[in-house]
Amino acid sequence: MGERLKGKCLCGGVQFDIGGFSHVDACHCAMCQRWTGGPFIGADVTDGDVVFSNESTLKWYASSEWAKRGFCSDCGSSLFYRLNEAPDFWAIASGSLDMPKGERIGKEIFIDEKPDYYDLAGEQPKLTGAEFLATLNGGDE
Image (cartoon, rainbow, N blue to C red; front, side, top):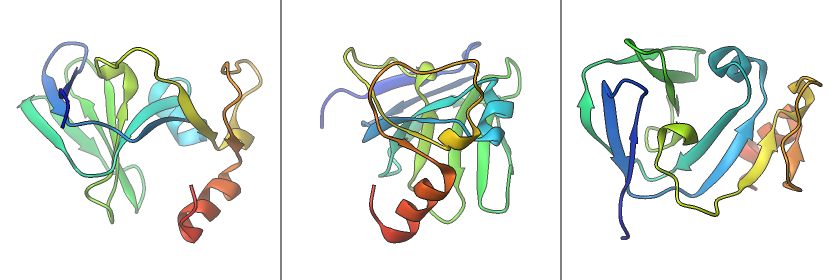
């Protein structure tokens, strides 16, 4: 295993590190837009390797029947998205991590819910919500 990546919220009330991530995606769903004020750009950790050194201000919000979102209760930083039925999966706000240089967005999801006033650079795959959900049910990514 290489060097662990450090992450934290704006005020430092939540600090953590991860062993690595599989890829970075951008989600344009309406819920992520409300949560972050724009697309949620998250680094996906699929092995549950998230270790906290400080979680004194970490709070969780049950945003749906199947997922919860973690945030700092002091500074309000949006930090984590987790599926209730897949406890080893974490989507971590990439802006909260000391990301290595050269990373690119792997895909954009819920592109059909993206507003017209922004576009992300790059030629990454762009999936509608239905197309993305079909990949989860079919096991393709």
